[in-house]
Length: 500
Image (tube, rainbow, N blue to C red; front, side, top):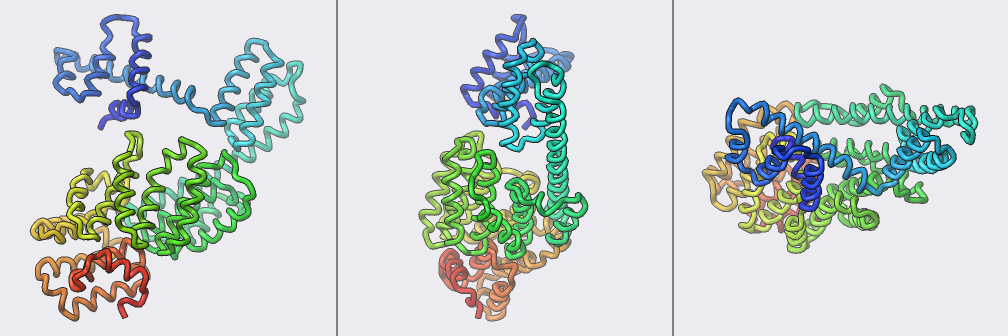
């Protein structure tokens, strides 16, 4: 999808109507074709686009028209965002703009009152860049009657500069860690998380006190959660979870300005306990997460699908399969066009897994709805997610007797990912693949003692203790147990000594 189409897809029907009115007001000539182009892009009319300009010589005119339409759309979106956003940050920014206008027009007394109000808001929200703009404006007009004393302003300005530098260091450290994560995701770089964290903190000269904020705790947990997901071992980040709990317990009040970070932290904590099979420990964080989500419509929309996913996983792996499946189906049927594609794909693959584990042929249909390319999934969802998706596709096709297709998918998987898996020391995935291949070529192998022993040995490894990994192993065990993989995985979750 090109950038112009992506921008248009951000608009709902009301927005599109307003954008058309916006263009009509701006059009000074009757022969402007921007409205025609908008209609053609919306209806995906390729032939119509070719007819917009008859001659190939008008290629430049067509691209110029697209550029003007995109510029107008960006202008419309910026105005709409500024006007419709009612967050305190935007309130402070609006008041700053008004204050500057009043100062430029010599309405000094009211202007300073506006700037004082905007400063109080920005300080409350810890918007240090906005505070910097406000204080610079106050310093610029400090010579006027009614202005604050220059020395007082200077002290506040320098203190805010210190806060800005601290935040800049934290943001640089976070960016560096995110870059390292990409190296792990896409290139199989091997790192120790604790060593990486300590090295980064020293590199950017970050103090322990700097780390004790909602934002920095969120950033650390984001990195730790991604790292644990890649390693499929959430025990590796337990120390960060414990420190987060200590921080959260020390917070006596919940600022509205920290709502995004607070909800995100609760999500990470709920996910950590879920992946450790502590479903009772996950539930309270989900409840608190929802309590905060309902206080703000924008955050409710942002986190709704993620909350639904964790809720469904908790239901499913505690024996309430039908409730978990129904919750995912309802969530997918109610997705809005602004829902993040990543969140929708997460729900879709999870529903596919639920149905497959319950031996429901509906999993085949769900597979067909995972339509994006592996390259898209690798970039947006990560290598681990894409590998799991491909493995699941092999198992689902085999489960419903599409053996040739399953073998074909298996060979494609091996060609695409074998080198990556060897590079990242993920031989266990290749071992699992060999066990699946043996079963596909000779189903009776599932009843041989050596085969069973090799499968059960997988359960004894710490890195295979994750609920998703257990679900894959359960599929192999179910071949000889003559049970659904769902019944097997519930037993594996409840009985750590199953293999013995």
